[in-house]
Image 1 (cartoon, one colour):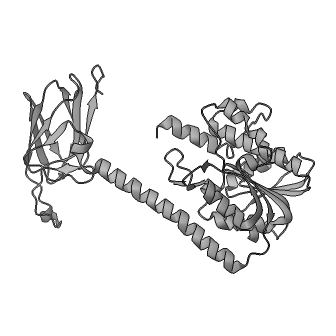
Image 2 (cartoon, helix red, strand yellow; image 1 turned 30 degrees about the horizontal axis):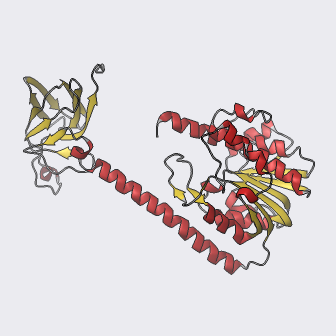
Image 3 (spheres, helix red, strand yellow; image 1 turned 90 degrees about the vertical axis):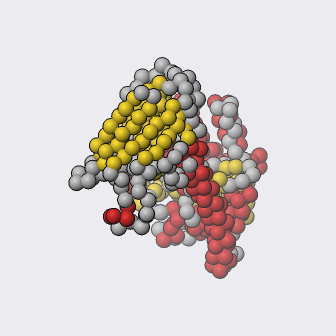
Length: 397
């Protein structure tokens, strides 16, 4: 992920969190990023659903951040009182300063029952929260417990049509993004009435998103309407469902983690796979992860894949102040010598290369790991840790 993408995601996630946030509810298109747009429209959708349902009562906003959305919901005639909860004390301090009329509390979303009595709220809203939780079952269980019998839970989360996604490379802040079936299974267990997609009320409120971002489509599972908490669930049944559901999502998370580790290991395991213009010749040992050691005398070939490009590589040796290692590199009439007295990396610029070259490496004295108590019988010269290229016309720095 490039830096600009990361900052844009962080910016969107931080719309809840910024110390000062100015939201133009009448002009969502002014949002600074796609993520900010989603955060704004979730509260516009919450507002429309609450206004339409016909009920009145207190409202809880779970994971309220700095409270900008809750302040807007508090103005609804149907909302008699509001409470906002979050786990970040700094953000709540900012919220209390900006909206002193609102009751903000430091409460974990996965422990609502310890903070509020049963059937306290008529409305509970939570946007872009579930995907951050390690235990979404406890969160939804507590939401159902804290709602009145005809209570309304409005939730927005990223969604996927076919498969849940963990360790999403496009948003490193999310633990799990659920597919439609997984989200429905979680919410239907605790609510009689769960609506998503075309069945959810006030869908028209969300339609401008696709007009503002024609290349984006809000997933069917993203805005979900839940009403009438189930009261016939035993603690034993809830515990069994919790175990089964969490195991299913942890399986996805662990598989995703394993696949990423394998992919990363394969990508870095052999330097000559990562750098196809390199051939390790006589004196080189089998590459290890992202490095390769050679014997005190070794040969390396560089075969340029772009005429006139500059090439170089980084290396280190096991020299110390008391036992320095002298390294000599020779190639195409060039010679570089180094006296290495630490394991700091050094870089050699091979210059512009138009045809294959051979680099001879000589290191003296050899480093013998067994002499320092390491069970390695090899005699070592230098360790290469990466290559670099610069295209034609680039300035070497």
